[in-house]
Amino acid sequence: MTVAARASVRTVCLAAALALPLASCRHAAPGEFIWAEDARPTPGRADAGYAIQRGDVLSVRVWDQDAISTTRARVRTDGRISLPLIQDVEVVGSTPDGAAREVAAKLKSFVAKPIVTVTVEETSPLRVTVVGEVARPGRYDLEAGAVVLDALAAAGGFTAFASSDGIYVLRSGYFTDGRQERARIRFRYDALSRGGRAAAFLLSPGDIVVFE
Image 1 (cartoon, rainbow, N blue to C red):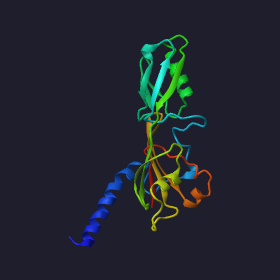
Image 2 (cartoon, rainbow, N blue to C red; image 1 turned 180 degrees about the vertical axis):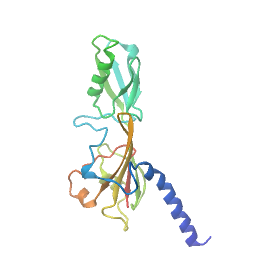
Image 3 (tube, one colour; image 1 turned 90 degrees about the horizontal axis):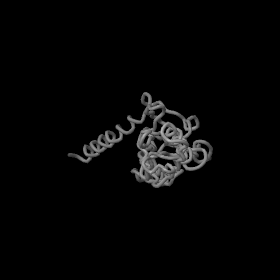
Image 4 (tube, helix red, strand yellow; image 1 turned 90 degrees about the vertical axis):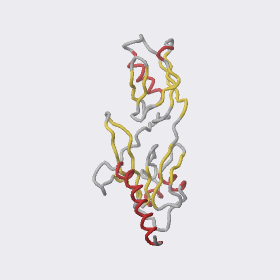
C-alpha cells in the first residue's frame, strides 16, 4: 500500500470513529446548532451551593429510621436514586438540602414528620472528550466549574488549522420529564476570550468539545 493510500485509510477510519459520537449528540438535522448565548443554563447546576451530578454517591439519612437510610446511593444516568419504600427520587441538579426535602416529601406517606439529611460522599469526575484541531485530542478530567477554554487548555491549544468560530459542545445524556435531550452548542473564540455568557458556559460530564 502506498503512503498516500495509507493516509487515505487513516482519514476514513478517523472520520468513522468520530461520526458516531457526533451524530448521536445532534438533536436535529446535521448543521443545526444553538449559539452558546442562546443555550439554556447547564443542566445539573444549581444557582447556589453544590448541585448533585450523575455519578455522585450520596448518603441519605432518615432520623430514627435506619432501615430506610442508606450510605451509598449512586446517582444514575437518569438523574435518580433508589431508596426503600419510595423507590426512585430525582435528585440531579438539586442541592443536598433540596434533595433532602424531596425525599422527605415522598416519605410522608410512610413516616410521620420525616427528618432527612443528604450528604455527598463522592463526586463524579468532570470527564469530557476533546476532538478536532487541537494538539492532544482525548478524554480529560477537569475541575468542577470548567468551561470550554479549560478544555482547550487541557488539550494543548489549537492547531494551525483551527477555525475561530467552529467550536461546538455536543451534549447528550440529561433528561427532562423522562425524555433524553441532545444539543449541539456553538461558540466563537472571540466570544470565549472576551468573557460573558459564552465564556461562562459550564461543561458537564460526558460533553464532547469539538474544535473544527
